Length: 150
Ligand SMILES: Cc1cc2nc3c(=O)[nH]c(=O)nc-3n(C[C@H](O)[C@H](O)[C@H](O)COP(=O)(O)O)c2cc1C
Figure 1 (cartoon, protein in one colour):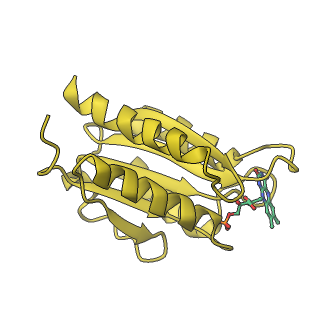
Figure 2: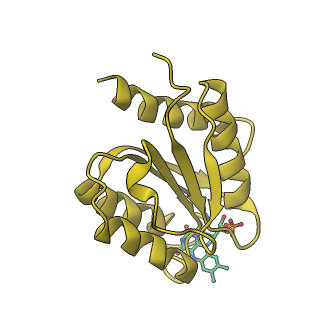
């Protein structure tokens, strides 16, 4: 399948850089398949245009005790409030197993995206992405693209 004309966005929140690294790796995995995704910091994200996308990936760290960081809340609500049932999505993020609820924010997004969009995959990375995580990132992106081919 030719993916070149498809529109994708990666919306991320990152306080210390781990999730930004993850978002960059996911962007490069999309590029390997010929898709050029736009990268949005959650603080810059505007909900207009969400419905025009083919793919959207949310990449988030986890805060508090398993919670979505506050800058991600408007992103969460945008998916809930717009008509995006057609949108193929993925929920990704970084977290720390030191905390009782590892990557809780990814689970929160997963549950919401499952209801409101065409959720294709989830991905949880421990802190900074390592070399071994690159293949997991590639498989995550591949799962999203495969959903389009169905
Ligand atoms: C106050 C605080 C609370 C956190 N709570 C959780 C948590 O509940 N679950 C989790 O998996 N990680 C938790 N983390 C870890 C971060 O999500 C993790 O370090 C993440 O990789 C940070 O991403 P970033 O570098 O993109 O900001 C917490 C970190 C801090 C500082």
